[in-house]
Image (cartoon, rainbow, N blue to C red; front, top):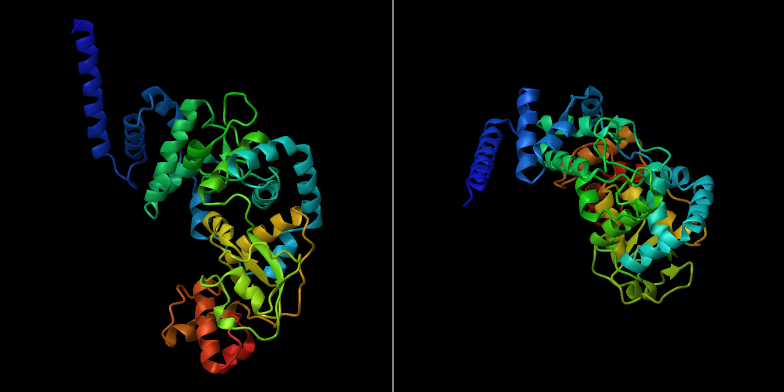
Length: 397
């Protein structure tokens, strides 16, 4: 071996050893910020990032108290489906969305051709997340991820995102000093985390970089590839509005599996668009506000919405939004029974817990656990088990 090569090899080995020692000594979370950042740098270098790039990415990094405040006071969806969807699926957003679908038709066509995801599905997320790029967040992304990684509540979730951000700096796709986004580290027009941007990023405009903040084509195609990774199946529906008869096995409604669309149709559930071509697919009948409100059949592709966001109200609204952009009419509002306010919803959850049901945290939110418990109690009481929380149910309990 040439002496210079041997020296280079020994130097590299020593550097790797010292890096490992620094990483081992540095805290995984909390403690002195400088020591913490040294550990982050060591981990990034160990993955192949040059040391000078890691230094540049972390230079000036600071804890952002506003991020911690947001993390500890996260908002929740207390609105009903009718309230939330009316606000988010507005006529103005529909008009802009349809215009975007026309203006960027070649990009959306490429997204569907390469990844099997229709334009309306992508455009609906684009609208719901950032109003088509208009509101992307004003938190420094690097500092947000440093803050959440240093904080010991969920470092296992955010530290990998910080390492991925450093890799984006290495690729020239992000300026750590100026890049802004959401408080939890999401970036760009469809609000994706750094790891997902690295894994699924597509250079849609051909400039050699993946910039999901300023490039519509990059954001659209990256979102399409990500949605495909969540399991979206080409050529299949995701949600379909239906009309329901007065008598159904309501206890079978909700996101639980077990029936096909054809079996629901045979029970008198009727698609408003008349399309029964997917009757062999597994399907759930969801009633966001009970049997007297809007009703939808959800297909396997609806699962990608639940992967994107776990809120039932958000996901149903986003899926409905996509159907509207695809030409579906507004839903039938129906005449749903009055629901419960925050105080009474907590009282209902407390009573459910006393009866032995697992409703999770007593938070006043009609989530999946609470809906499932409600159905069981409605069935026990001889009431239509549609999962909707009403004053009559609370009184009966």
